[in-house]
Image (cartoon, rainbow, N blue to C red; front, side, top):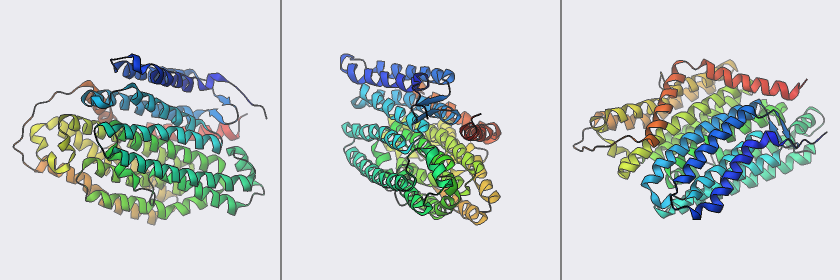
Length: 482
């Protein structure tokens, strides 16, 4: 087995690392912190171009550039691009946070996400997950400058992440003791051979518990509301959309490659976890008056919806899960863009009852909010509806009709928090008036995400096909390279 050191496949990570190091080393010499925004934005655009021309191949045995990693890195870059633009607008109104370190930590977390998507062994995946997570802990704590309880939210997220790391390491140890390897392909070969499946399954359950912390699956979900509310709003959207996307995508890689003989058993084990996650997330979101806490609890439910595709244990179900996460990434960033606008004008508007009569004051803003609330609730003709529709169809085709029925019933419960927001906006009256102007840092992410939410809702087939073909080609070239 030869070890390749092809630096061409890791150029995007090297570029982002150099930019991140530059920001941390030279930020003190720049009084105008706008340089960090433009440098970060430019580095993301260049990284996109580098990904287009980067060759397939490996860097050592632990890193692989392939269909899976490149396509999903583009999706992550798209989300990160919008988050960075949103951050520029947010930091303009919150100068206490406007330092280069903010963008530097964001870049480091993005590097961790990239490495995680390309990892081919458990050690690399674990270290990449830590690199993705630690900058986010610090970004939440940075908000201490304007919100004292942000340290509490950061500490809770850190403790939850530490607990997840312990589970991951225990699981990796059990898998190694049973298979003698931590590389995905070698684990799969051992499982097809004479490996003790019971120990491997137990090890994967510990690994799943570690991933569940990041995905906020029940019972590892209670860190999410405090962390979401404590973080700067663009970082909250980053946690809810990009981190969740990367973690579940890598869990799917584990199921498709390393633990492929166990995927049917794992799918059955996930049924109660996923259903409880949907139910508890939806029920707890009902009584929330703070918009961000409501979105935090609903994100728990959405993680459960994404997990429905993992139950099927087949390529179609996995592709539907990633499609749903892609849709959720778009509508989450769009909704948080509106939250940033509201918070910039008046922080009290983040309380749902304070949105009373918003349709009288701003019909355009209210209509955009309606689009994202419909999408999050799964109401047609939005992308959120199509995402859930494909997941339910996948369950029915795999014979899990009762799971699909329960998920549909829980979705009805989950629609209430979003419709409650629209009830205050459209059915309540207000005497307040205010004038505002849409700034590029807000209208660009909002308009792009609203357009995609409606476009994918009306015509989802190309997006679903893209995800399915990506997974199919990835597995084909991985197991049949010649």
